[in-house]
Image (cartoon, rainbow over all chains, first blue to last red; front, side):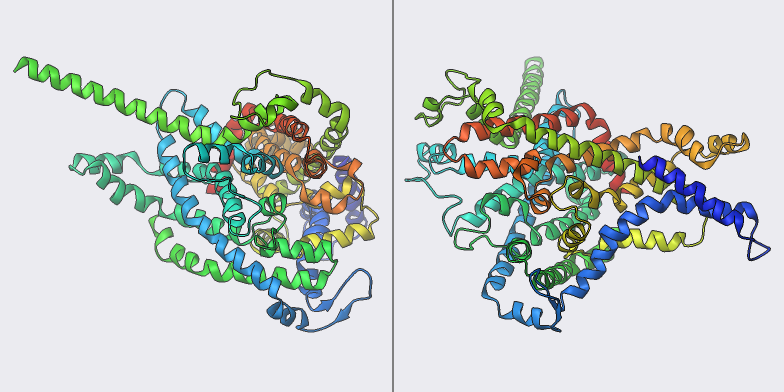
Length: 319
Length: 285
């Protein structure tokens, strides 16, 4: 369908230029024709992106200065949405939880590096294990959340296992107590992320030239010293890249929180993205939601400045 | 002397065996952690009313029952949601591939005014935050009177910079001589793109197709926003909706979840070659 549309536009567009005499003599007829062809190929993508990607980026920056609910006409309010956010207790809570969520980053990265080192060898069946580790990544968050909610159930298998091992005395309310809900959801984020970051680190480990490690080993360096002084420094750009993505993901966390707890109990897992969602599609308070989104984007920027600095300073120099 | 060296050799061999045993123990333990929650859900979906809350929990259900697997089709009309998902995924995937494959061609092969500007605009969508994207797209679709229709689910994601860049990278890796030969023979650009470039770009297209398939199949939030009628939900959204409604019959939800996972796992297992190479390519590019 789109194919037909593209060829039709290409045909009509070139006919238009054929009818018009070339403005400059230096531009040959075939050249103009080529330009038109190029834009005909780009047209479907450009139109769709103009409507659904570029327009929202620009319009989002506009509506955050407006009081915009679907029920009333738009009204310009200046920075009122931002001052409202600074005074909003629930927003403060959500910022705090999103920042707490960054705890996930170091744990997740260390676990992923360990798993990548574990599977970075040729053993019979290693592809099977790599695949098994990647399954949580390709599964929908809803399926993941349903599985974990079942594990976390107060009569669930996790409580049973921990009680019978004698680690806890009575069942824990993983997702329904104020204290445990956020860490419990963080566990799921880590569990789902390991496979993803494993692949990144695996690519990193496999890009380390074998000769370097061998040369160090021949020079009499112990296995640990080779890892410490050859492998880890060469892996640094990958660590920084993954950390950057991970920090961004943590500050914007939405899916697993929304599906598992919906921000509760008692707003104890309310994160910025979940709060923004409720303001936008629960309360239809679009202007305020856009302002929250902008504050979220700014926070991501601030938190990633140190990572960027390191990328510029040390990380990229190795390559 | 001789016996001692033999003992040392035996010790070394024993150490090697121990190392391999340790290694596989670690590999299996991690695999149990990553697949365990799903296996437990599978086990639950095969249980009966009686043994779902059995104490101690049964890892392997006794008896194994297919009642939930059948019941979920009868009672929850799973086929309805699966058909919606197939519709959204098939059309969305097809249009994304066509639009990206078309747009990537001039960006890889042609010189034209505005090329750099388009490049910059595309890159900017990958780095710039789009915090109000969902809100504005919802309002746009409302104006287009597409809310509560399936096209509303896939239309916004069809044109995306990631797909265009991925395929442009693929085109650049194809030697241009064959296209020039076709051009000398008098073929138009559209014919060259269709007959010469696309067949050679299959690996890149496959990578984009898998990623896009997963994205569409697993998407739950956007359908929840733009569809008001639960009968139109794709499977992921429907599961979340049903999970709330069937609290006391969790076995059906478990069975439905299993059905929802099968297509993704089949695609992933059969095409993981493209998946991993594509990921590595995307990282380098």
